[in-house]
Image 1: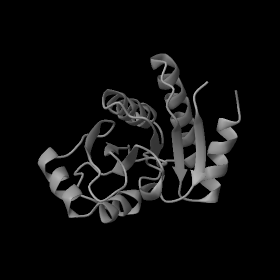
Image 2: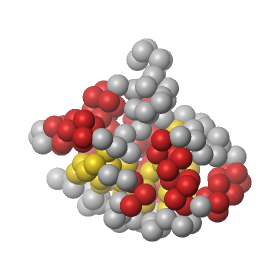
Image 3: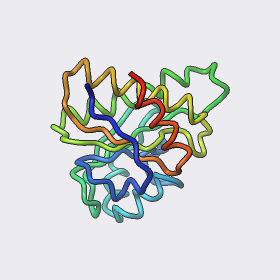
Length: 169
């Protein structure tokens, strides 16, 4: 069974190999998790992201962690919530799949995800968490990966949603 758990806290301080940034398509920093990761990583992250040249929604890009205590940061761009009829669910699932594939390709030992798209992008927290947990479980089981996955939640409400989903089997 996959080793998935949810905790409330600062993703930049998570005790994992790789952290995931809920980035915007420019990869040049922003608010929320994205801003916190860029501030903690320092100017080297911004310089590296400039060289990448952006990232389309649903895809993922990997960089060094710079001043962060991790091996890498994987940046993924979640969908903006438009009511659910614009392919948001598939794009969000792709964020998790593509991120996990990069982590797998880079021999990741553990990873922490934020609640992608649930901040300023407006994705309903419950729906986003269901997609996150289902997609991560499916990927980890299909690839037969025994890697701890942390859902790093900004607040107690989000942590409770994830814990409820993770307690189901």
